[in-house]
Length: 124
Image 1 (cartoon, rainbow, N blue to C red):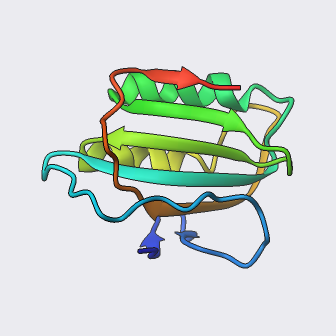
Image 2 (image 1 turned 90 degrees about the horizontal axis):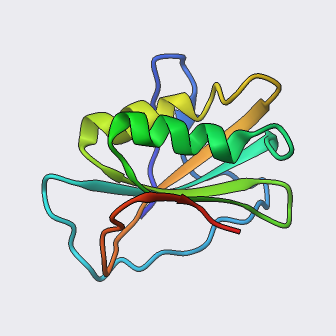
């Protein structure tokens, strides 16, 4: 299931036809009501600028779990899991990124998980 989420900045998250890597997630597992999970793909000038470390810091600040990694096509992918308020805030924050980054698109897709991560990691 993919969808668009309106942002306060007027931008929208959702699927785009940019051709960037955004892995498919399983939809046969039901999340608990108290937690949301999203797979996110961020494109633009997001590698080599500290985007993953920034993402981890923001996620920990918001109490999220999950992971973030660089993709071969130059994008950054993340899994974020947490409350609706925390995931919503992180989805907005992805647009700003760290100093030196230039975000051109943020795509988010609801994710279903077999297990909820217990921390937030930078994966390689």
